[in-house]
Length: 390
Image 1 (cartoon, rainbow, N blue to C red):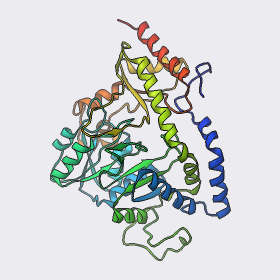
Image 2 (tube, rainbow, N blue to C red; image 1 turned 120 degrees about the vertical axis):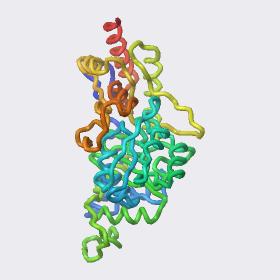
Image 3 (cartoon, rainbow, N blue to C red; image 1 turned 120 degrees about the horizontal axis):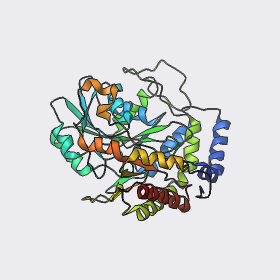
Image 4 (tube, rainbow, N blue to C red; image 1 turned 180 degrees about the horizontal axis):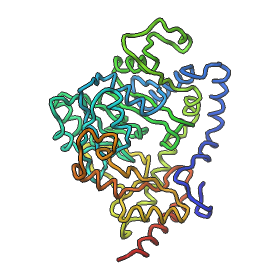
């Protein structure tokens, strides 16, 4: 494991976990090479079946990234030019850019200050006659309040789409993230809870029509394709698709790592508890990840351990000088990003999102990390605030 005695503590390192999974990964890779099919082939189909079994989804469509999964899902749900999709103002840029790429218009709403997820009251206030969909994000470690957001969607006749890119293993009242509405997505970028060797993603849905549409869109609008016969181009649908097929190499890696996923989730939870125990009461640390009380049981998964901290940027500089990696999610809220300036939002529009952008920082939290490394990170944080006490 990454120990506190080493020169530095990287923000993410998955080398040890990858080595442990290598026998399974190697077997899947050998089968891939023996098949001679390296894209949209048998390993991808096998991965779709395995992921469906793990999540309980009736349909899984593997694609080449979490971003493309969002775009294709929104298109499959019928988003068209002029349609508005309500999204949180605090999230990764793909949450909003996927709406634009699907042809719609993102409409921002503020977040709940504790969970950092879409505030149902703010979302409802943002509904207009042009609103077509509501897209909450399951962020960092907690699912959004899908009970309240689902009620908002039903009251206004909206499609509920989940940006569950970080949601592998998260469940809401026993239902896996991405399956509470029309569909959801998963991202398998390398630092995610379940990471591939590069970009990879998937759409989850219980709706066969949405699954069929996403499957068509991911392969240039082709229909009736199988893993054994995908070379022809005569069977095109009436929609223009794109090239968003998953590579079999990524599917092989994910198949090899899937058996260790629950253990990896449990280890992340252990590390999160260790951070919380050691940082509770530290002056300058404004908020630690909290268990948000819900009306239904919600299973969190610590994709990232994110705190809110006073003098965040100075703290990041101090930790960097100590050889400790961090990540700021996200330094600029979506409504203030230059690419969305044309939507007319201004500083002060979404107070909770803006506060989170100024104060949040993610600490190292991954299965290869040792508890001793957590001690070192927490000691460095204590020293920073002790030295800067007013």
